[in-house]
Structures are given as C-alpha cells and as structure tokens.
Image (cartoon, rainbow, N blue to C red; front, side, top):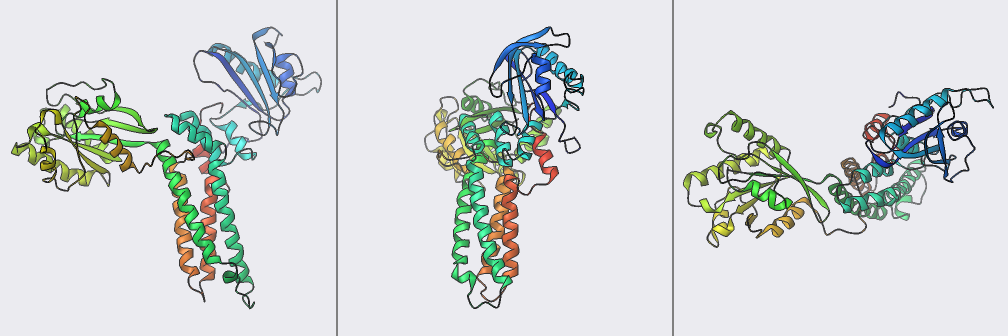
Amino acid sequence: MTGMDRDAPIVAVATASGRGAVGIVRVSGRGLMPLARALCGRELVPRMATYGPLRDARGEALDHGLALYFPGPHSYTGEDVLELQGHGGPVVMQLLLARCLEAAAEIDATTGRATLPGLRLAEPGEFTQRAFLNDKIDLAQAEAIADLIDASTEAAARSATRSLGGAFSREIDALREQTVQLRMLVEATLDFPEEEIDFLEKADARGRLDRLLATLDGVLAQARQGALLREGLQVVLAGQPNAGKSSLLNALAGAELAIVTPIAGTTRDKVSETIQIEGVPLHIVDTAGLRADHEASDEVERIGMARSWEAIADADAVLFLHDLTRVGEAAYAQADVDIAARLAAAGQGATVVHVFNKADAAAAGIAEVLQRQLHPPGEVLALSARTGEGLQALRQTLLRQAGWQAAQEGVFIARQRHVQALHAAREHLSLAQGHAAQRDGALDLLAEELRLAHNALGRITGAFSADDLLGEIFTRFCIGK
C-alpha cells in the first residue's frame, strides 16, 4: 500500500461478497460531484439519501437504489465520499463498480475534462487508512474498526466499540500529556542549571512520575484484559489415549464435535473449536493421545502425536487429562509422569492444569491421592466430562489462569502491540524513576528515558508510526473498509 498514490480517488465494493438484500459501492476522493451526476443524472444534496436509477453509459438503469454524497472533510475518510446502495447481488455490485471506473474516464461536458481522473480500485483498508491520514481517527481507533468487524464475542464487540469511540485513545493521550509536562520540567532544569530554584523539586517531579507510573499500570491492566478479549486463549487438551479429551471438548463446546469411542487412539489429528466464557474466547484444541513413539500403532498415529506436541508448544494453557479409572496401573502412572516432564519442556511456559477425568466412575478422593504423586505438582481438578460435574470449576480455572478479571464495563479492546508499547513505556519510566532519585546528576539520562517513554506511547495512537507498521495494520482490513 505504501507504493500507491494516496491522493488518487479510490472505489470498492464495501459490502461482503455474496448475495444480500443491499450492497454498497463506495468512492472516496476530491471533487466527486461530476461522477455523481454521471451515475445518477442529477446533483446530489449533501448528506441526504437520493433514490433513483443508477445509470450506465447510455443512460439506462443498471439498478435502482440510493445515492449518498458526503462532502469532505465531514465524511468517513475526510475526503468527498459517494456511496451507491443497490441490490446486493454480486453481478449488480460488479456492474456498478465497473460503471464507476468507466464514468470516471469519460469527458465531463461542463468542464471538458475527465469526470474523475485517476480513479482506481482501493487496496484493503485504504478507506480507513485515509481516515487516519486525514486525522479523522487515530491508529488505535482504526484498529478498533477491524476488531469490531472481527469480534467473536459480545464482550469483544462492546469493547471494540468503546475503543472506536476513543476511550483507549483518551487514556493514552492523558499519559502522553503527563509525560510531556515532565519532559518540560526536566528540559527547563537542563537549560537553566544556574537557577537557584530547583525546578524538579518545586514542581514535585518525582511525585508526578510516581503518579504517572501508577496510572500507566492501570491502563496496562485494562489493555491486557482487552487483548485477551481480542486474542482469546489457546487451550490444548493433552494426555494419554482414551483419557477423555474428546469427551471434554464436546462437553465444553456443548456439541458433538469430536468422535468419541472406547477405542484408544480414536483421535488421530487436531480438532479445534472456539468457545466463550464470560465473553472471553477460548480456542480449544483436542489432540491425539500421547505415548512413547515406539508404542504408536502406525505412522498415522506417530504423525498425530507430533502434531499434538506442536500444538502444545503454541499453547497458552494445557489441560493435562488423567484417567481416574486407571489409577494403580504402574505403566499408566509412569507414562503420565513422563508426559508431565516433557510438557514442562515443550510447553514453553504455558500453564499446565491437571484434570482428573471420569470422576463419576472413580472412588472418592482418588484424584487428590494421585495429585500428590505428580512431578511437578499442579492445580488439581476432578471432573466428569460425561456428566458435566466439575466443568464450571474448570471454566473458572481457565479464566483465572488467563489473567481475566470479572468483566469491567470500561474495558477497551487492545492488541498485543499496544500491550508491548505500554510495557516499553513502563520500562523507560521505571528507569527515569531511578535517575530522578539521583539528586545531583543523571538529568540528561532522565530526559532521554522520558522521551523514549513518550515515543512508545505515541506508537499506540500513531503519533510516531513508521510506514511499514501502517502497511502491516491496514492491509489486514477487508477491501472497501
């Protein structure tokens, strides 16, 4: 996208592909009224819907629908915007799109020039990118638009709406403003070292810095919650064959997604499903049963186990299932110990929750006995995937392990890059705290750390953004948005 002409007018179908009641073709650029006349046969009143035929080059109707004209800067992109709303068939939309490009190249009888020179098809996310470049929205709000479209839960959608409305950006702007005030104080002290008044002491710079850090910690905590709402948690079900992994997946999903039989090794490949708990998306992956490679019955099972370990390496949490009906079998117990040891290495820091399944068929208290034998120890959860006993406790454990707190109404959607930027800002402010504690020196280092913290915060809303970052963000949008 960085190589495209950002001043050229653009056009695209703005609705999803396929059939629908209504479809929209959107145009953005400067001086769109001649194009509107060519398509509608009349002048359009700004911000008023006009119903009538949408015409081809011969003046015949391609479709009948609504045309809306938004003069810039009072539009989504900040430029003139023309929207043609017709019947939502894919052929109709392509005809209208082609007609826009055709009409743009025609000579306008009034001006003697092309109706809309340079009109081209929009790149993915280019309408929203122009809104950002024309200061209609900041970068965090632009990302919130994509997050609202992609939201997989109601909580994520509501949080994205709050970010789109500027809730997250206002928090970041307040942090940046406090950082700027501190930078001004430090720079004043550096510029006038001979002054008798110690600017930093008089203005309580250290107290301000402490309060800034405390405020940032609050925003960071909310951003982590928002990132969890957006990204969800990758949860892998692991364990020996026939421990009940597929039954647990079906119980959590509330549907028969995986084949369940008494035959060990029924699951040969990964089965995935996304569920939500209190609005948090959980991506549950059922994997093939784990055992030593030499015990695999065939090459297919070996490949399935290899994929299981790959899924475990990418997991945020691993539910390690134990079969309570096989307690006392020495070989089974040793295999569980071996898997636990390998999980500790393969999980790369993922939380491991030990789940003792088939509680309905086991003696009372047996799970606690087995838990004491685990190496390393972990949280014990006894449940029955068949009856549903203990499932609610498992759901709450997963939320707790994810770091989720009871949903606050003020949570805003956030991305991992936002969390990383806030972490970077916090690091620099913590270093600044150390320099500020040295009364007789290190002011230049203090000023530099404040500058770096300021820049890190600016990257969230786009105040400091490289073109490659913008390209990475906007090319992930759908075309027409």
